Length: 123
Image (cartoon, rainbow, N blue to C red):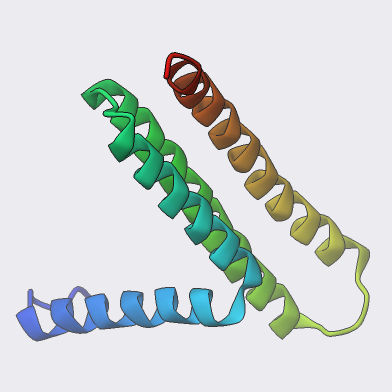
């Protein structure tokens, strides 16, 4: 049965989400690499005066990388909760979710190269 709308519950849901983001940054070393890449891309984009469309691509690429990394982390935590013993199916699940992060990261790198390289060359 659905509970009626409650503003306190909605505020708590934001707190849970923020706790999840904190856990992600505290426990995942790759999160700091992604954060550094984000800071570099945003700083470079600011100084190179990206257009609105270029910013949309950069922001979307950054978001996709973080989203896939966060989901990969959640999947890994869940798999580790299920068993600490080697399991070939869990290995496949973890490898596939890590593969999603790799795909997103390569896509973000390509977007960055397409947008930033010509602007840097024109300096």
